[in-house]
Image (cartoon, rainbow, N blue to C red; front, side, top):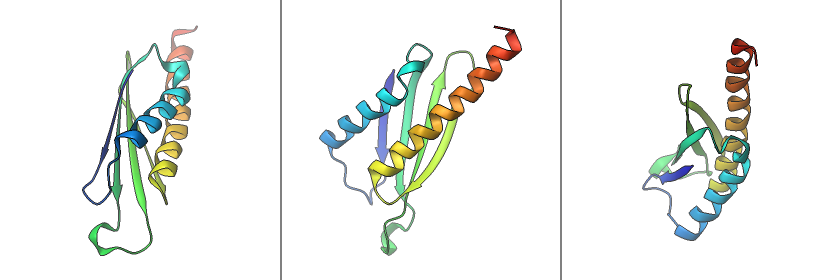
Length: 107
């Protein structure tokens, strides 16, 4: 599973933090390891250059063999919270999609 994290130019990027977040995403999506080919994460500051309270949006797209990509979005006050919240939503969405696929095939 290939995980790629993108941040907009309003957020500082830190390679060490990104690798820790990649590992946490990998752990949360571990049971889908054989089905997911890659995960793309985008984090952006909704307020942009206006400043104000931190309001971050994370969109996560998981590409899975045999079904269309699963995309989720989550808001958070920190990059970590936004990404981990999106990972939780992705697990639920993948469970739902793969469950429907299993039910349809009767397995």
